[in-house]
Amino acid sequence: MTNRGLLAGRRALVTGAARGIGLAIARAFHDEGAEVALSDIDGGAAVTAAADLGSRARGYALDVTDGGETERVFKEAAQWLGGLDLVAANAGISTMNAVRNLTEEEWDANMDVNAKGVFLTNREAVRHFLATGTEGVIVNTASLAAKIGAPFLAHYAASKFAVVGFTQSLAREVSACGIRVNAVCPGYVRTSMQEREIEWEGRLRDMAPAAVRDEYIAATPLGRLEEPDDVASIAVFLASDLSRFLTGESINASGGVLMD
Ligand SMILES: NC(=O)c1ccc[n+]([C@@H]2O[C@H](COP(=O)([O-])OP(=O)(O)OC[C@H]3O[C@@H](n4cnc5c(N)ncnc54)[C@H](O)[C@@H]3O)[C@@H](O)[C@H]2O)c1
Image (cartoon, rainbow, N blue to C red; front, side, top):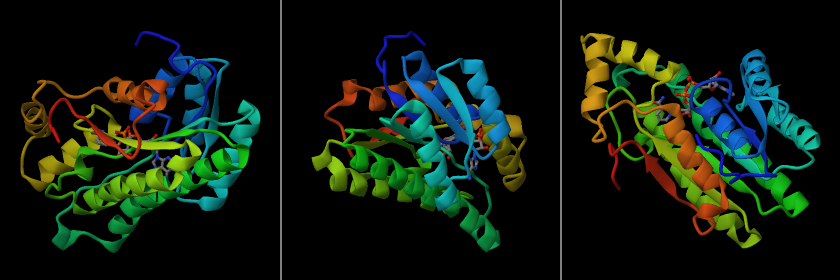
């Protein structure tokens, strides 16, 4: 991606940043001039990813389902950065299962990371922004499944619909303080999550994984799988002043799979 300096001088924290979409967002923020704290439940991979980015990046171990740990890592990162202006709540998980076979553990795990994790990350971001008088920006990663349900993804969709409602509500709550809260809704993105989903869906629908992948491409008007960088571009837009008059939005970034 071209560096336009859109985030020069900004101090960012990204969750789920060791790989996939989170890493692409962290790299794009960094390329646009931000200093970035990359956090992930896989702390070792976050540290390695940060070292690859350079001296304006640092890695942290953070499980976003743990409120105490989230508070502690935000404090550590804000101390290193000398403040915090920008938070991307991206960490997420998925599983696929028919509702009749869905376990409580699967339901709880998806809700814990995807919905509660966004709540805890956004709460810490807003606490920091309010305490320091910062007109900060939050970008949440929702999903195609935050706007339209899909077979075998009822639990995941429920957790992602929650992100849209949370984003709208928080945006209204903090707008008077100059804090903006938006979400990005990716489509079929080529990451390790997608690799797992293609296998699961193939088994659930008795199809070859390659045929599932072909269906994802056929469902995408722009005619290819989405790349993590395609999502990161929209995250940069939402993080930067280019979107200064947007708040409470959940922007589709899906190559046309979703159009409203
Ligand atoms: N890949 C897609 O097609 C797609 C589509 C729509 C939305 N999304 C969303 O995008 C986000 C990133 O997905 P991805 O495809 O890059 O997935 P991925 O599995 O490739 O990467 C997710 C990262 O999140 C981390 N993570 C998992 N649980 C965590 C926790 N409790 N605390 C902190 N970090 C944790 C993982 O270690 C991993 O590094 C997720 O919120 C996902 O739901 C993905």
